[in-house]
Amino acid sequence: MTGMTGRMFTAATKPLSWPITVKVPMLVVLLMVIVSAVITNRVLARLADTQERHLEQLAAAYLDGLSTSLTPSVLREDIWEVFDTLDRSRERYRGLNVDWAVVTDGNNRVLAATDPTRFPSDRTLAPGIVAQFPGAGVELVEQLTTAYAARPLTYQDREIGHIYAAADIRPLLQERSEVFATLALTNAILTLILAVIGYCAVRRMVQPIRILTLHLDRSTQGPIEPIAEEVVGSHGGEFRRLFTRYNGLARAVNEREELAAKLAEEEKLASLGRLASGLAHEINNPLGGMFNALDSLRRHGDRETVRTTSGRLLEQGLAGIRDLVRSTLAVYRDDSGRRRLIPSDIDDLRLLIEPEIKRKRLTLHWTNDLSGALELPAARMRDAVLNVLLNACEASPEDTAISLRAVADAQAATFEIADSGSGLPPHLKEYLEQPDTAVAPFGRRSGLGLWMVKRLCQELGGSIHVPEKGDGGTLIRLVIPFESRELKHVA
Image (tube, helix red, strand yellow):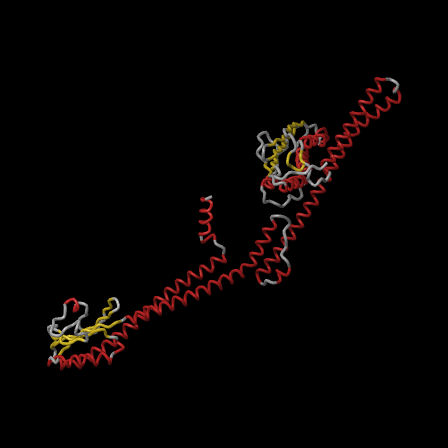
C-alpha cells in the first residue's frame, strides 16, 4: 500500500503528468517569478544607486561647507568656534542625518566633535576609527546602518587637519525594504491574477477537447455517440470543423456496425438454413424406418415379436427426432442468456453439425470435460461454439478431421476448436485477437461468422486466441470467465 501511494505521489509530482490546465498557469507563475525577480533586482539596484549618489552629493556639500567654515578656526585652534560651526552645520544639513562628526588637527588630535563624551578634545583619534574612513575626497563606506565620509583640511597646500563624519542611513535602508515589500506584494498579486486568468483561459480553450474525449470514452462502451448540434454550434473555427467531422465519423461507424449486425444475422440465418437441410435429411431417415415399422404392424400386427420390434423402432426414431429438435431449439431460442451452461448443451452441438460431418466425410474428435452447471449463459455459449464449429467444417477439406475440446477451471471455461484447413488469414487472426479492433471484416462470409463469435466473447468478458498449429489448419481457443453473480435458472 505504501509503495502504491509513493508511486501515485511520484506521478502527481511529475510536471509532465499534469493536465494542460495546470501546466499553463504554472508556466505563467514561473515566468512571472523570473520577470519579477529581474525587475525587483533592477529597481532596487537603481534605487540604491540613486540613494548613494544623492547621499554622496549631500555629504560633499556638507563637507565642503564645513571645510570652508572650519579652516580659519582650525588654523587658530579655536575649539569653541569649531564646536559652534559643527552645531550650525548639523542643523543646516539635517537631511544628511549626521550621527557624529569629528574635527582633528594635522596630528589627528581631536579639536572638537558633535559628541564630546565619545570623542573628548585634545586626544588623538583612535586608529580603529580612522581606519573606517576613506582617504581624501568624498567616498562613502557603508557598514551595517552607517555611512562614513572624510575630508582633509588644507591651507596653502598644507594639510592642517581632517573632518570625519558618520551618517545614519537606516531611513534609506528602510525605504529600500518598503520598496522591496511593495514590489513583492504587487508581483505576487499580479502573478496570482495572471495564473487564474491563464487557468480560466486554458480551461475554456480545452473545453472542446474535453467534450471530444468524453464522447470517445463513451464510444468504448457501445455505439459512438455524436456530439449534440447545439454544442457544435456553440464553437467556431477549427473546433466546429473537428466536431462536424467527428459526427460524420460517428455516423459512418454506427452505420457500419448496424450493417455488420444485419449481415451477421443473415449469416446466422444462412447457417440455420444449411443446418435445416441437413437436419431434414437426418429426420427423414428415422421417419422412413418408422413408416416401415407401421407397415409391418398393419400386416403382421398379430405377432408379438413384430409388435415388440416395431415399437422399439418407433421409440428410437421418435427419440432421435426429439433430440435433434431439442438441440436446434436450444441454440436458436432466445432465453436472454439466463440459463446456466451444462455439459449436455455442448454435446447437443454434435448432433447439429452431424450433417456437415457426413456431407464432407469428416472425422470428429470430441472431448467434453465440463461438469455440473457453469456460471455461463447457455444460449450465447452454444451460439459462439456452434459458429466456430461450422466455420471449422467449412474450412476443412473432405476426408480430414476437426476437433473440439472443452475444459474448465475455477475461473473460466476454455473451448478449443481445430480444423484441417489452410489456416486462418492474417487479417482475421489479428481481428480476433486484438480487443480494440471493432471493424468487422466485410465481404467475407466466414469473417462475419467470426464477427458474431467475437461480439459474443466481448459481451461475456472473454478473449479469443489463435495459436500456431503445428500440423496445419487453425486452432481457435475461446476463454470465457465465469460470472460473479448467481444466475437464475430458467426452464
